[in-house]
Length: 591
Image 1 (tube, one colour):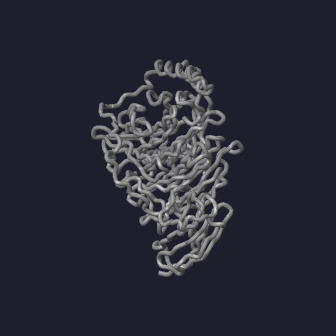
Image 2: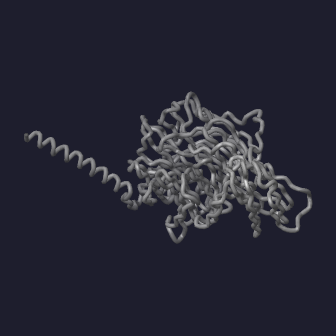
Image 3: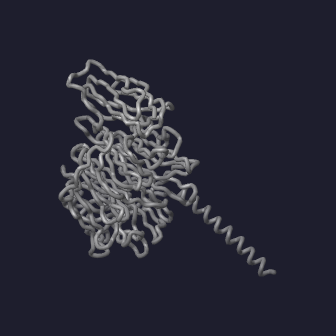
């Protein structure tokens, strides 16, 4: 009897202890001890002298201290696990036949199946869109078979694309995940890629590489970021650079990534930076112990230069939460811990991405909130508030997720794109110079014949179209996911034709003909001056169902062909906006 009572008491104690540890872990995850620890070691002092030379713009001293630092601490240089290092296969010769305008501005960049990763503990972006300061555009993605990391480039505002490189993982290895960024180095644009490769397609034992090349795909180089420990892997990286703020000699690159076990369960959120273009790396632990995933890293040079990492944590599986970690550049890699900000909502919040306005240091964060009914939400931080401004980006309640955010470095506008699921899964774009000023809800893939993929995230980037003129570009894939399509705000869509060469005296929007119609009709309009033109279609509830035009146009008279094959019978409204002019008319679709 005593033995039975003892066993019962032990069981109660064991269960209580497990519960206590679980509660303690949750509290420790949400409220970590954040204490500043001054690292006065010789290594830390040398590091801070180098960082100060960077801030002072003393490139000669910075180069000298950089060389001294990595000579004294050679443990920061890593070699590949084996001799089968990734290698570049170069541009495609000959280039594939160009597939032109597939819909109203939707241009196919690449054909074929695209890698996507299922499960919660994964990086959600299957492809990347980047833009250099001249407006050239770059798209990178991993093929579904994981055998190639492919990079395309466009020099004509996204109208045509050329494959500049195809990167092989080496040997029988497979690509697992990647991220890409581009920065200016002595007037030569350099593409930086952080990529994880694994022994097999199903493996999590990822070896993390830094890879770089010139903007034409030449000068490829691959370097291991950190030696992979036995039975663990480094996966799902995010990469950025401070090249917009500093000269080529003082440009640093920053990478955040996960450490996972053989089953893919995370145990550390890690970061690395290179001060010499990938020849050696300084390392730091962003956070220990927990399964932190969906990583994104950003750098902010305004005020105290700081590194930010956002990620999702699922210590409570049914209620994942976003965390933002921050550390000053001078404390990176030292004994000083990162400070943590909790994005706490009553519902699950996850899948976050950061963007920085390089002109004034304001920052935006976009993420998804909800259980089955998802909404896209953005946060904003400036000099007066720290992530305190919250904006619901979703215009209507529903399944809206997979959000990405960008802030073009020479303009300062925040641009957000996301997927709105429904009868026709659509890609939605909105923008503003601040997050509270977000406006508009443009359907990017309004003319596509297939739904957009909801297993990958679309991507958005701002770019220069001329002196003081900027536009936006977006990429998305179709259900599969398969194929990558590009659409730009400055691409004139097909089905738009100019009537004559005379310049009209005033704005005008005519009644569509025929009306009623099934399923096509013509819309005539006139614009007397060059400018941005938007022609959209709304339903009776005021929801935008089609974007016919959303780009810069020259003065003239035009006719737009509108095909409503994907819409149901009913009454619709079409609205023309250009400058201060706005006009709306009604049309009837009868099928």
